[in-house]
Length: 68
Image (cartoon, rainbow, N blue to C red):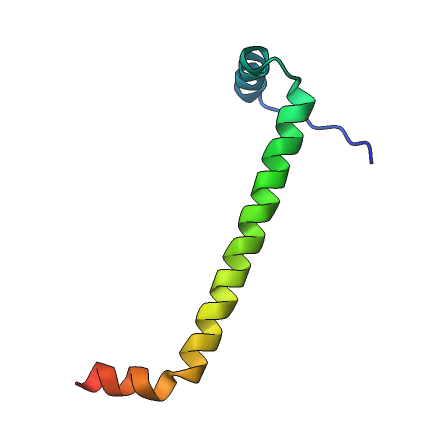
């Protein structure tokens, strides 16, 4: 899917420099960054869901520990 991305000049310049250093394109860097972001967000959501499950499962125990 094609899309246009408008970047602030300072970010565009930083990406240009990084792309030159890594011998790649800004396009490739943006795809890599978007992929990392999506994976991180997914991981965060899974961790938070697990915490919610554990909290619900052990709520009585956690309450007793608070009172100890």
